[in-house]
Image 1 (cartoon, one colour):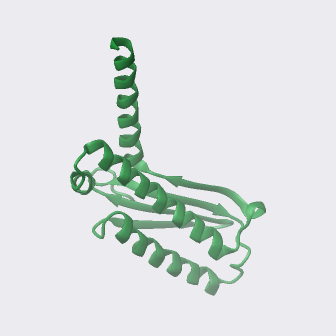
Image 2 (cartoon, one colour):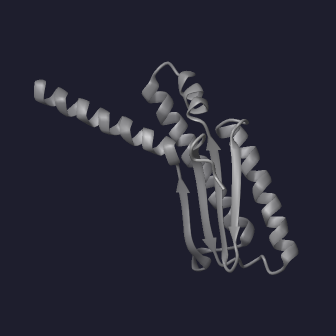
Length: 150
């Protein structure tokens, strides 16, 4: 169970498919191992090696949530590496979105689930997406005020 008090969702892939190529328990187990390794390596590259990854599977058609959890402190460390706060937030948002999309794509590919086999796929950005949305809204307000003054 995710610890939402001390950590926040930085990126999440939600996969709900009718898997074509996972007919046995061994194949399902191989998928779980593969997607765990895939998620860890991509998370290390795109976000940070110190974040935690939680993978949940549900029975029936394949349902999986691959959740990358981290602290706001880790997020701010990443943002502070850029000279501009807004640019840092935008770049981390892009990485968070890309990470979730890659995990969705890899799960869909590995399971052989094409369009007719997909029930739902989502690439979520969690707190990073919320912060990005706030920055965009502030920029829109600022642009609107400049138009009124100018």
